[in-house]
Amino acid sequence: MPIECRNINYKYPGAQFPVFNNLNCRVGEPGFHALFGQSGVGKSTFARMIAGQLNGFAGEIKIREPKKVFYSYNLERLPGWSDVGEHIGKVTPEANRKRIDEIIESFGVSACMGSGFSRLSLGQQNRVNLARYLLQDFDLLIMDESLANVDEATREQIIYKIKDMFPQKSFLYISHSVAEVSMFCMNIIVLRSFLKDPQTLTINGQDSARGRAVAGKDLEQTMLEIVNAS
Amino acid sequence: MLHKRLYQFVLVYFIGLAFLFTVKGVFNLSDYVIPSPLDIYSTFRRVFMRYFFDVLNTLSVAIVGHIISIAMATVVGIIGRLSNWMGSLIRTAAFNVQAYPIVAVAPMIFILLGDGLSSRLLIAAMICYFPLLLSFIGILSEPITDIEHFYVHSGRMRWQLEVKIRAFENMNKLITVVAGSATLAMVGTIVSEFIGASAGIGYSIRIALYQSDLSKILVALFFIGIFTSLYLAVLELLGHIVSRSWGAKKA
Image (cartoon, rainbow over all chains, first blue to last red; front, side, top):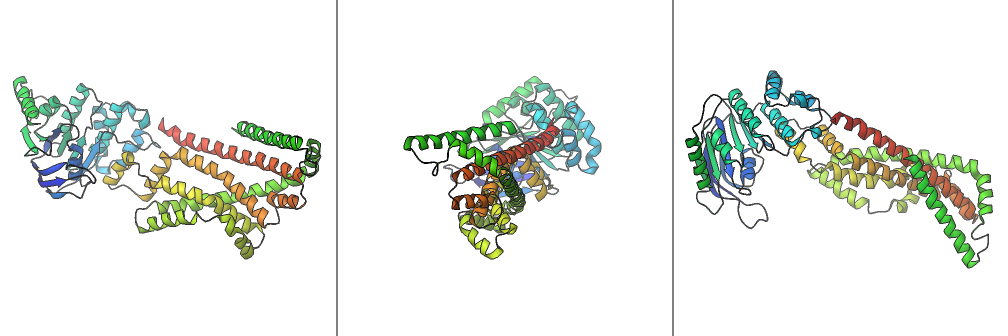
């Protein structure tokens, strides 16, 4: 489901400077893509625009059908009156129930199912939150630092699992780790300051998958391109 | 909880008495103005049973009035949390109407409904209703974005769920507000009895006032304090049980 953003202009009410000034970008085929940029450059704002959760901007965001877009972020919480397993069971559509065990197990949160969300570590909370989004019927899932506080090895395992399980879905992964986005993502949209023109640059990532090694040199090259672009 | 409440009240009550006796001693006031401790004790023994049942009567009206006001504030708070014109209208009305003292309207209620139970109940409910309503609207109209986000964007959000999330997340605040308004319910009932009813401890205080009998008033205050503390302690205990039974599922 390609996403095309044209001439996006946006300024928060009361702010002195705009966040986006004539921003254009395109995310093409399904796969694991990234939105990368320095803190405060507008990644979450842009993600919320794509998800339809922020309006009042000038320009156009075109998402081709089907377009069930979900936006998950790392500060989300589950309600406290039920345990994690009970909650996930309740919010998972009937057709996706058979995937619960597979996702929960591969995310390493099986032991958390009987616990209250507030008792989990930050990393476990983020994994549980991401798991419930993956169990929804989505076409595009925006993962805004959804794997923050998760160790590198587990993060890698989770991303590979997502790629294995959802090859036809689109993901927009927001992360501050150059190495991570270079390694795992197909396209990296580098979001820059509104003073720069163009405000976004798209870099091809290594799109690493399970069983497909990435040459160190290529990875370094991608990382260098991202750093230069940002 | 209960013993703490009772200690606090008894301490404050006897400090108040000590102050009165000090004033009596310093200005050499007669027993007619401020009775002696012995007078107060003998009045206490004389009116104990009557005042006990009077304050019990007042407390029962206050409890029913309190329950009615909680129910009303919940319903109106749920509607008032809406961001549409109806919610806005209810919020504005709540803020404006509560500025008008219910005590000033009380005589009108007695004229219309008489000096029976319904007037006392209505005034008690109205006096604690508005503070409750303002708190309920404040709590229920504040989104818990971190939790609600998922439900809203997955199309699962229903008003019942929204209210449940907000109430659960603000459970301690709600319990404090409900327990705090219990005092207002008691005050409202006593004020209504004092103004025009023909039963309850407020009515007995009015009679004592006509007789200029400070001993009776002091004894009535003692009973009011004991029973209000008792009611507050029971409410706090209930709140504790509710938050523990809900919170237990978090574990």
